[in-house]
Length: 408
Image 1 (cartoon, helix red, strand yellow):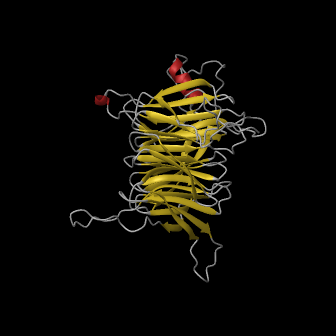
Image 2 (cartoon, helix red, strand yellow):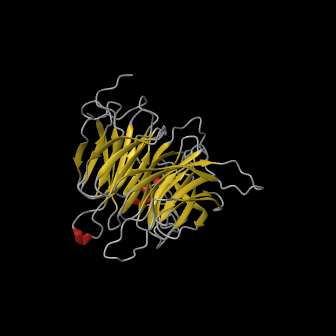
Image 3 (cartoon, one colour):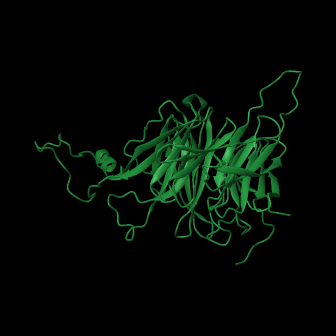
């Protein structure tokens, strides 16, 4: 028997979660959500928790997003300084947040807002999901409108926080220099701006997931509620491939009514080498399918598709609402609308474990970002955590597929 999930009650419904392993071996978890409008009486927040290598929480930051609810987060390492020599400085860890119609960048260590202008050109688009490239130079966002936007992180020159206060030419502090403490802090900590690179328009419905191809910043994929996963050139916005997903035959109709069988592709991920793409698709009712797509060598003469379907396996008897792949590419963690969490071994596309965890549909899940034997996060029984899930039931679950302690 595997260990039961460890459940933590939180103060608000959770809609986004992310997990990052820092170069010093510590784990950083971020979750976000809230009650939406002030009338609900439930605040909107982003919570960032740091764990030591022995899985003790030693720092927790709470960011109040005021009347805007954050529905998606990602964590990445980025060099945000101006003309930084990468051989001399450690990267900052950045939390990228989808807040209403905005993308916001926060420091995972201080909670400070890092972006100079966090209201971007995704106005009225409804940002659903975000991602950062492996080298920390680019950000993606997927929108409710079906658009995918890419941005370049541009570092800004920083004043010396210990230097003298700048003043205007008249010397009374009414010029260009920051004068109040708040102005000085904003000047010091606004360390980057996001420069729009491309707008990718092809999805017909809301985008559910975006991610970069490992090891490069040129290619990215997005999946949406229009039944497709698409690959793009993130620098130019050119569409490179379309993967039209299948979720089996439509479920039986009720009362003789014909209901369109809409396919929702809730998750997508590259394999660690970028040679395969995995998608998770389901209808609004019925079974869920995990698809595996193989990248093909370009052959303009034969007009071969960029990706060919390799497998499309049924992984759940009900729709899947969240998906995440482990950093080593060995397994996928899936959350269903019935509150269950399933782990799928990707080598053989086989079911590893299923857990009954949440009282409501799983809204988000994040699988371990590293191999089992490197900087693992462990539970109270000293078992390595394989995924962390959350839901609108105000619960966060730490889940391990192990049945006993592993030694290395």
